[in-house]
Image (cartoon, rainbow, N blue to C red):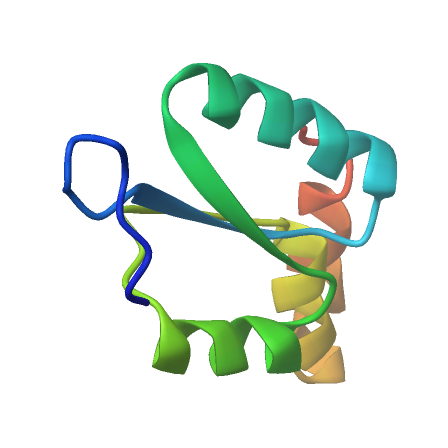
Length: 85
């Protein structure tokens, strides 16, 4: 990314990977207040595409998206993560 801040430096970039727009909006607001420019991906394929294009200082990824990639033998572990936020 060639975008620069007013001081001539690259912006601090954050990647948000989450399927819930309300959660994303809240995280975007918090990161923006701390000087980050956010890129949002709603699935892992989009996130992978984003990391080939940008350098991110921070990445926040929903554990539920990661569970979708695991095989069925790990359902119990992923189900246990579902209640954590």
